[in-house]
Image 1 (tube, rainbow over the protein chains, first blue to last red):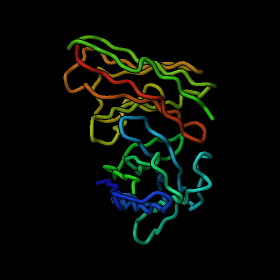
Image 2 (tube, chains in turn red, brown):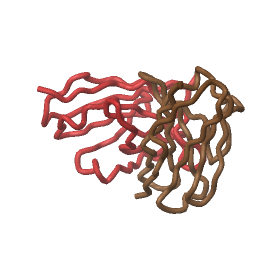
Image 3 (tube, each protein chain N blue to C red):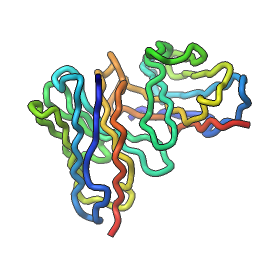
Image 4 (cartoon, rainbow over the protein chains, first blue to last red):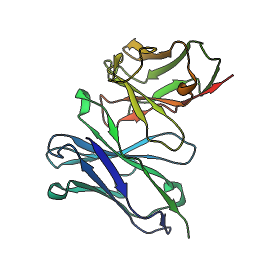
Length: 118
Length: 107
């Protein structure tokens, strides 16, 4: 059974760093890429970045200077770190698996709501 | 970046109606468009990939079509469980980009 589950703090102070974990099961991180997608309250979806099956990464240019995605294959975990958070980074953060043009995001985590506020 | 222009932003329908949502890409996306349904407080659910391929479990009243830059998504015979927001996604080029969404409401 394929599952992804995000975890992390619900509240982050402005200018601080956000750290989120996506724990997956039912598939291998060497078989599927994992992306992070976020959604501000009441707004649309924004792709943030991906870690490929081979371990390399790609980021949305709008976030590239602040964003880092990594993984621990042995723990089936993917990590997101984003620094210099501002109030506009308040959003629900999702991880989702994909296989590029073969298969778009077919399984998603339930999402974690992150509020940036002092 | 490929821009996805989705319309309309909102749609009001009666049960049993047919509704159509469109997405226009800023360049040819070679049919690499997917459609998602999202209900409040839930993650998006993949309904259709590669323009018209229904995912397992997607009811046959959902359909997709298009080519080049222009794509559409339809629901025939709208049911109450279809009340949700819908998003298109192009996945041919990075950054992957979503349409702004369409909120389907009951009339």
